[in-house]
Length: 283
Image (cartoon, rainbow, N blue to C red; front, top):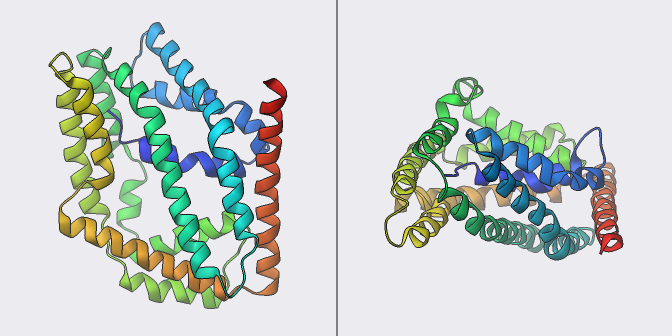
């Protein structure tokens, strides 16, 4: 049912901490509404199904405040202690913490999605499949015609900008050089993902068969390991290459860039503190 899970999970921290126009803490107050509205676009859900979506997205807001934000704050606080002696360790630890957060978020939504899937009509299932189709991605053709190293550079620029760092000419050259060691996997990923979506559609259509829930949970978890062994190995190599580039860039930060980075970390931490404080006041 849900290839959008990855985009949903990855967006959570970024939107929560850096949303423009409103502070992160105010965004958190409405995160259940944003997520609910996002999920409701996938099909023409019934009133009861929409109520079900509202319930588990509201629960996710409480889940974040009670379980995850303190962990995220701890990771950001560790990054504030960054110096030339610990950059590699901190990058590896931060990536590991983020991957654990994504896995924990997946586990939260799993059973709720399984329950919702059991009530879907065949027409709704096909609507969801159509919504997830890559043909619906209006930016896909533009991306395909953009040189790979430029796409890589754009992602690095956006990522570092979110943490207060504007890359200089030397750092941009590092990324351009490093991008040649990355595998271009987007077309393979879409192919494997399309197979995953098709299998998921067939699975949900057969929701009345025995062991449906176990089969669906297994399939949802398989999304993190789609593709053949060669593809997964290249994904791993890309991740290591990206981590290496991040380390190299952090080593090269100027005093002004470091200052902006630590200021942004302070902002993120203050947002989390406000969110936690608001939640505790309501309990």
